Each structure stands twice: as C-alpha cells, then as structure tokens.
Image 1 (cartoon, rainbow, N blue to C red):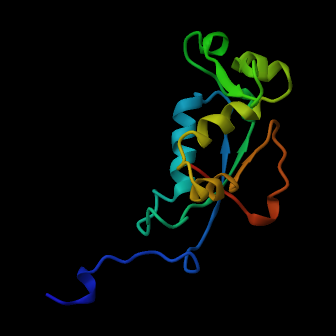
Image 2: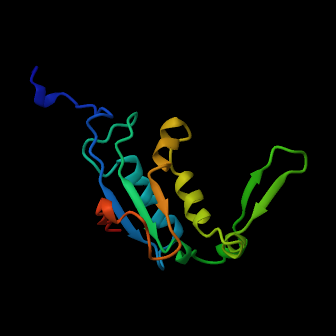
Length: 148
C-alpha cells in the first residue's frame, strides 16, 4: 500500500510545540526523578518523538535541594571530575555539594548523564531549570504539573 497513513512522520525542529512542566522534587529519589525529567527533556513522552530532533519540553524543578538518596549514597557516592592539570582530579560527595550551597548540581549531574553526549544533548539540558526553593521566575509560561 502506498498511502500516507502507513508512512512514519519525522518531526522537524520548526514544527515542534513545546510545553512547560513544573516538578516539585521534595522527598523524591534522585535517580527515579531524573529519569522522568530526562524523558520529558528528550521528548520521549510524545508520539512525535524523533531521535535526531529535539522534540522535548521545558522542565522547571523546584525544591531541588530536598531530593533524597536511598541507602548510604549521600555520604558514599562520589562525583569525580578532572581539572585538566596534573594532580587535578577532584572528588565530591552529594553531602559536600549540599554543604557548599550547590544542591542543584546533584540533580543536574544525574539528568545530564541520561541525555545524549553531543550537541543535541547540550541543547536539551538548556531546557532544564533547577531552583532550591519554592520560587521560580517562570510564572508567565504557565507551567503544568508533571505527574511522576
């Protein structure tokens, strides 16, 4: 058959309609929350998902400082980065990040690790907005609640 209904539609970046979602992260487990967020940022929740096009939506996360880990991960998990200099390997635990007033970095690292490692992934992570408290400056976008 040669009808249009049997052909797969590929989304184009000009045709993508984006929504804004808001997530309250208070008391949520980091890994489970970040998989949902990464899925929305990629656009996998839409029927028009296309792997090579950024079809995802914007996500606002409030109370990002109140996420939790299971078990002893808050003290035992390590984030390792390299400065580029000899002897420049740096390690930090989630407890260190919270005490250094960077609690959003925990969720940002988790979500960023679940996105593609290319220019498409870098464009997707720009649609993620993390805030420590209840307040956010995106009221004009009328964000919808994201069901987890």
